[in-house]
Image (cartoon, rainbow, N blue to C red; front, side, top):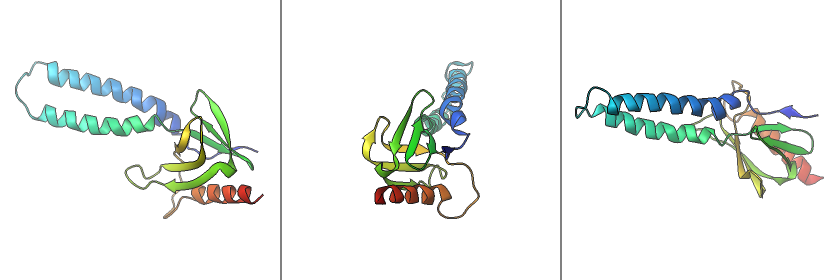
Length: 147
């Protein structure tokens, strides 16, 4: 039986956040650079630097996938296409602590259609240390390799 490991936030982070960010930043940049004040105000350049740095963070959200799992396969989707990857293809699972502390990365032994590194946001749990989904995926991968 398939069950979801990724958070329901994924659709917001992957699709809605980049769209909202693009419109908000475009609007503010147009006003600050082409508005009434054409003075040599350095704050607009500081803001532009901030926007560039934050845009890199938002761009990384586009790579997020949704993950489901059963006893034999990992199901990876990007909202337009879904693939299945055998659990035995999992090389390692890591928890990225900074700057996005919730992000989990699955490294695959052989590349899939989405590459050899799959990133997702797991369902929220208030735990210290390693997220339970990491232990679960590692155990499932080890179990499927033993068979």
